[in-house]
Image (cartoon, rainbow, N blue to C red; front, side, top):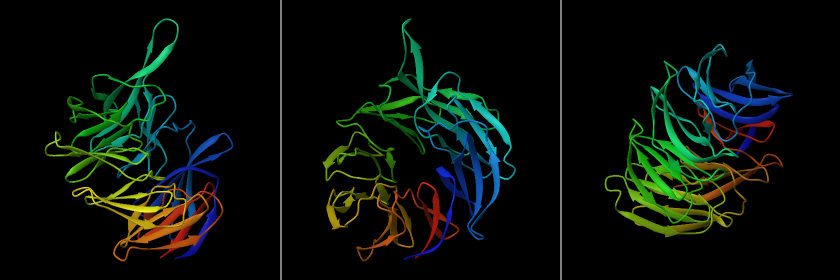
Length: 329
């Protein structure tokens, strides 16, 4: 590995890749800016000033036409990827976005805290799932209420069903937001429910995994391993999990565990690219783990925490707080 190029940018709040470009949400002065970054010329080719503050508890998502950006005022703006215009907005009323927004072809899904007043104070200990139509901007469905605690970490994953982890529970809804199943968990999950072809996995950052078979969710297993330091990544039915000592490989089918010593303090999300797992650590190193050879490599690119790597048009890119790197592998 080596640094191919890098560029200094304003404070990077979030970024995602789509159709060969990188969409950067940055903060300049008092403005939030959506920047379109071309990895070929390695330059920003357009800036769109959004005029609203982001919701930092919920990350954007992107489809073929728009970037859906959550605000801190219970709204989701759809920004045209080519013009930067606000082509629609979804207003979820007084509900507070409390997890990443998810999408399918027709809908935007949100996990929301519902504010309730007892005459003395307002609480958001009640949550619901909301399905919102992309074209009409209107709410299509809303789930029944779920109890949680304001400030608790809650997560939403949308596949063929909607999977919500909240307050030591895994709750399953259909796409019409009708509750189908609910399971009590022993530990609070720290990440999105991980949905594979065969399993649904709830993972806590203390090293606890609770595993459900998708075809028969009553088949429920648990395993505790080393405490992790970054979000897990799943390849098929194999889970990779960075710890303070290195990397764990957990076969979900057999619950067998292999450990690999890696001298790095990984905290970022990971991606799989060309047979390798890539991530960043808090000392500014890019970590590469070869899945077949089970060997690792390290590249120093700076001194700050590196964020999630992304793959753009067969290029590996990663950022610190205010610098974007292209890594040649």
